[in-house]
Image 1 (cartoon, rainbow, N blue to C red):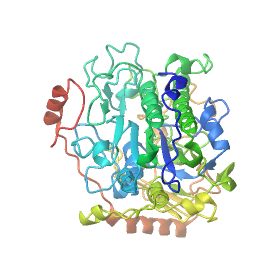
Image 2 (image 1 turned 135 degrees about the vertical axis):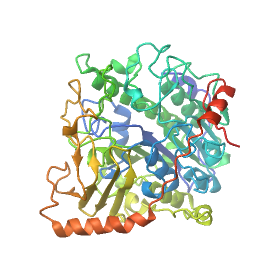
Image 3 (image 1 turned 60 degrees about the horizontal axis):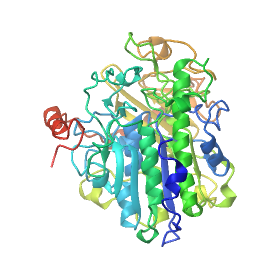
Length: 529
């Protein structure tokens, strides 16, 4: 795929061991929109051999939690905050409130850079692009190849947003996303990537950029931190033929296309880890793999396009956009030579949240995780907890016993605010939860699945649905009526959390943003000084 790996490996054969051997190289791999049942270690029908091998030699994280959709999960990872302390709303490129709008938040890349790391980001950003201070280089990354919005046409790199991205693309010169005139969304370092925008599938482009960055690594410059976030499995469903053909032609189309895209991210993961091994870096690397949310199991809202998002979270309930386990409990593992041998080949069922990698990485780098810049700006402090004692085997249980998944997250006029909280074995959900259904092991296998407009797929929890997610992990039995004392305690805890809710306001600046798009040659980019 792309530039052959053997050709890239020929570019460099020198050792890549870091000068500071005590600090590991860190590779965080974010698998966009990847369903619980769309990875080989949960479903033998999925072709993800590289990830499967890494799980086998690593540590599976069986209860790793994220936000119910894209940008807030990424914001949580980058800032070490639970989503309700940084942001809980997906926004578009021309909204200055997109992502982590306040530059007072210190990103993990900046923390690691201060500890002597070289930093690289490849793939989907979705964390803000209003100014040069909001893009990867302004947040602590040395180099990057990214797109800014939540989705794009993988083949043309033209922008699209849900739910339009669900629409199948058959003619890339006249796509649903503006009939071939939508702006390109591809940015390299500090300028539009005009020379490669639209040249080939973004999976290939991200693969080659990430692999080349590893092979060009200079050990004298400190250890490497790479945040690799290919958006392969996100709609639109556009797998290259070589990956589509790995799956039976009699599979339902959405299922087959989506599965092909999962095999694409697996190939990227395999190539980058192979590059790390070739540079003798793997023995001192910590790899963290996580989906950003559960797999999308919804159907297009456009009745003229019979197409859906294609994922599967079986046996968990729900999917992306819901606070059910299928939307927030995500496929994850750690691997790499830095992981102690005694922890390899195991499954860890303790709670970890996406925000916790911030303090964990800071600990490994030897830098204080406290965010002084944010404190000076009056922003919420980090919520991150150092998980290295748990991951290394020094501690038997997780220090995280509570996970506020969402607190008064405003998901639109129809849904209103939704909340969800885990405390110990209990989970409470409040508000209207969409995609409240269970998928089967062969899902999707019929048209019309997961329609947003189908009230039968919604469950309104009001002030509280209550589940014991340890004894009832698929959330079959609502125990709100049977456990009134527990319900009241969970409601009280949510009420205690609400006063610290933080959400930057929307600030759509379409005219200035589009003027910059035009100046960039029809490519998105920062428009503020």
